[in-house]
Image (cartoon, rainbow, N blue to C red; front, side, top):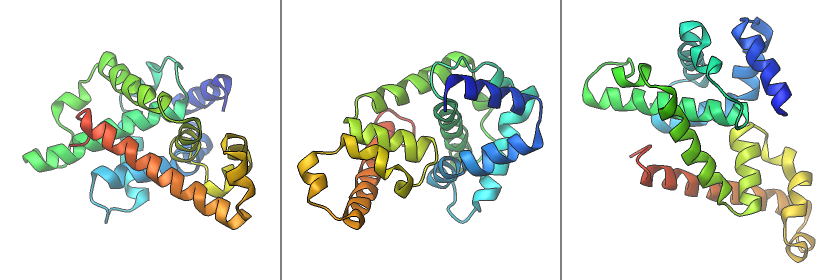
Length: 196
């Protein structure tokens, strides 16, 4: 989506448009929020529960966290960063005995900390190989399905390798490549202290 599209979505979310809220959280961001929530929290919690909980967190204080968004990255990337911080804080609070609410630091976090986290993620993604970056941006951040990005990913592939594969082998290769890129990104974030 373009920056103009992201601005329209943010305006509609802040206006509490129920259709946009449902589409944004339960369609557009479902895959990323579910993945991030399950990565940091109990995998037995339903995706709907995790997404609903994150919606309540993000909409708190009259959508303050969206109001400070500067559109220097995609909205999905920004939401992924906020979700990572929220669910990591939730996990950490459970481990340190503070109950199920985020640690006080998480709710009082200032914009510079959000920006620092966002810059870390953007830098890691920017340093990936072009195909890996494309897959992370489209599948993990934008919530596309691997099968939906096959045609767009083809120009980023080695032509000889692409020609040697059937469509089914190519789809399997893309899924495997995405899984490895996602795992590397996780490990890099952990090395930076975001998910230890």
